[in-house]
Image (cartoon, rainbow, N blue to C red; front, side, top):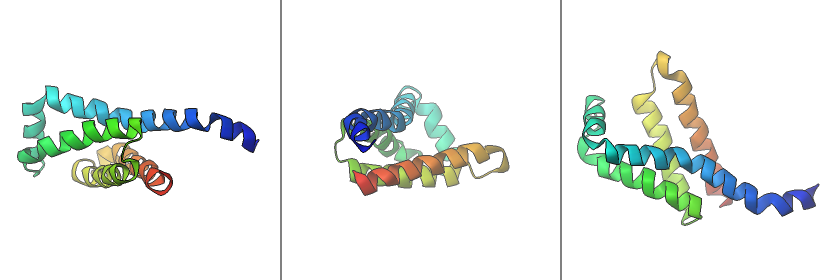
Length: 117
C-alpha cells in the first residue's frame, strides 16, 4: 500500500496545494476588483484600510506561491497566522462559528505544510 501512496504522492501534493490555496487566490482577486468595498469593510471592523495591499499580496501572491510550491514553509506559516487572525477579527460571533472553524481548519492545513514542506 505504501508503494501506491508513493506513486500518487506528487498528484495528491499538487491537488492539496491547489485546494488549500484556491480560496486565498479567489479572495485576493475579489479584493482587487472590489477594493473600495473591501477597504470600507475592513475599516468597519477596526482594521486600517491601508493594510489592504498587504492582505491582497498575501492572499493572491501567497496562494499562487503555495500552488507553485515556492517558499512553501514561510508562506504557509504566514497564511496560517492570517487565517487565525482574520477568524478572530471577522468571525468570532455566534452566527459565524462555521466560518471561524473553517479558518482554524485552514490554519491547521497550512501548519502541515509548514511541518512537511
